Amino acid sequence: MSPSLEVPIRDESIRLGQLLKLAGVVDDGAMARMVIENGEVTVDGVVVLRRGTQVRPGQSVTYAGESLIVVAGS
Image (cartoon, rainbow, N blue to C red; front, side):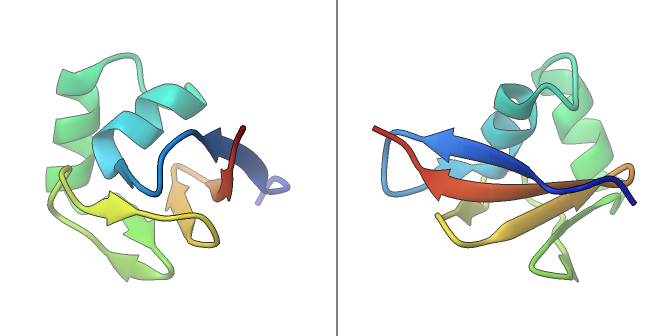
């Protein structure tokens, strides 16, 4: 698995689908929805099936071998 990628967010939380787009691991919202609904994405090691799931700084998201760490941005 590749090293974790830190993804800064402006607000207190971000929807999972938006995070995947922001990090550049999916091309668009349709792809984000598909990979989430297919059970390919985990948050803190738990498979999540809702793209509207809120992700907060300190949580980790994994998809396709990429590990994303959500951090508070400025």
